Each structure stands twice: as structure tokens, then as C-alpha cells.
Amino acid sequence: MYHTIRLFELEFISAIHHVEVIDDLLNYQHIPDYNSKLPFVITVNADQLVKLEHLPDLKYKLSQSMFIFPDGHPIIWYSRLARKPLQARLTGSDLFPLLWQKAKENQQKILIIVSHAEIGIKLQKYYPNITYYTPPLFEVNSTEFAKVSQDITNIIIDFQPQFVIIGLGFPKQEWLGLSIYKNLQNQSSPLFLFLGASAEFYVGMKKRAPKFWQKIGMEWLHRFFQEPKRLWKRYILGVIPLLILFIKELKK
Image (cartoon, rainbow, N blue to C red; front, side, top):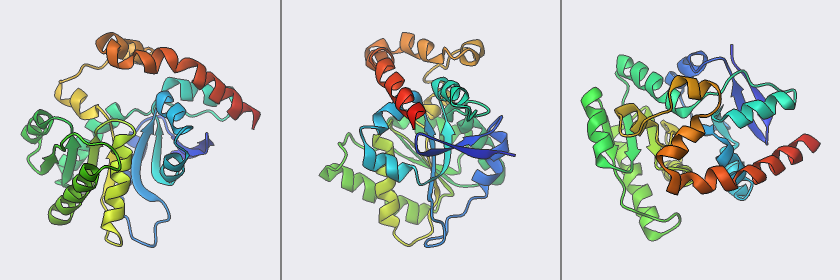
């Protein structure tokens, strides 16, 4: 049975595997004015943890998420150092295929928001009972952002999905999810899952590290070799802020 452990002002799920949690995701029903938490599934890695320190408003809102998974070995290592050990790293990329298969078996509807239409087309070949939306380029809080948010809200109202998976990268996908949820107001909401590049891994457009690299906590290095120009700042310059954050948390 899984439980939660509070670290960095977030209630992380502690479980051996996503299997322990999957039934709660599949059966989750959000009732307005009854559920105090947001119908969100977030997977927090070390890079996001550091960035959230500079986005206190976003961090506070995401702290209200119903399901918060630790998606990063540094978070697991820190939890052991702090004597609040999380049982395992629970990644969005491992959650996606499990949820996808179970939702397919249950014939549950999925709306997926992705950066490239090719991802949605490939996913529909696996499971026709989905719809996808590929937004134009937009900046958060722009006029285009508001339009994209409303367009997706309209799709949700018409399509009535059980799950909305947003894979646009942090923190854009989280801001978008919050805006859509606000648009829905007092209506019953689907469960939102913010899963980054998980869909791209699933359809083979990006490659994950071999299992051995994942187990020893070096998946980040594999990703760095694949996309060095995009990821070098995250992995090289992000180490010191992460260590500072760990030290601050230990002193609390």
C-alpha cells in the first residue's frame, strides 16, 4: 500500500511501483467543492524542483495536486539522507504506458495535448478512442495562451475524456492545465496528467536510456548525449542550485 511523504513542501507518493497507485488513477472522480485537491498528476524531477523555488505561486498551486510522483534519483537520494525515504523513483515515462494500457482495456477516453501532430497520429493507431490537440506556439499569459486554453476547454466539454495528458514541457504544460481547470469552473473535471516527453518515448520518437542506466541513476546522462544543446544548462548548471536547495531543506 502506498503512502505519502512530505518533502520540499510537496506530498510525494512513496510506492514500490506505479501499479500500487494505478487503480486510484483509473477510478478517480473529481467532484467540485468536495475535493480539496486539484485533479492533477505531476511527476517532479530535480530540475523542476529547483525551478519551482523561483516560481512560488506555481509551486503552491501544484502542491495541491492529488498525485505527486518523485521522478528523479536525486529526490530519492535526498529522501534517504533526510531519513524520510521514498521507496522508489516513479517516472512519468513508466506511468504513461501503464495508464495507457489500462485505459485502453477499460475503454476510457483520453485527450492528449502534444507539440507535434505526428505523436497524436501514432497514438491513435494504438488506441482509436482518443483525440489529440496540437497547439500553436504560445507564451504563457499571452492572448494566444488564453485562446489555446479555451479551445482545449471546449474539446473537454464536447469529448468528455476521463484523462487529459499534457506533454508540452515544464512549466508551460502546468500553467496550461491550471488555466483549463479554471475555465471548467464548477464542472466535473477529468484527471490531468503532466507527462512531458512520455508520449514521444512511447511511440518511439525519442529513445529512453537502457534499463541499466535507469537503475544506476544515469538516465539523465543518456538524455544529455541525445540533446546536449537543449539540456546542458539543466544538467551542468543545475547541480549547485540543487545542492543549495537540499541543504536548505535539511536545515528545516
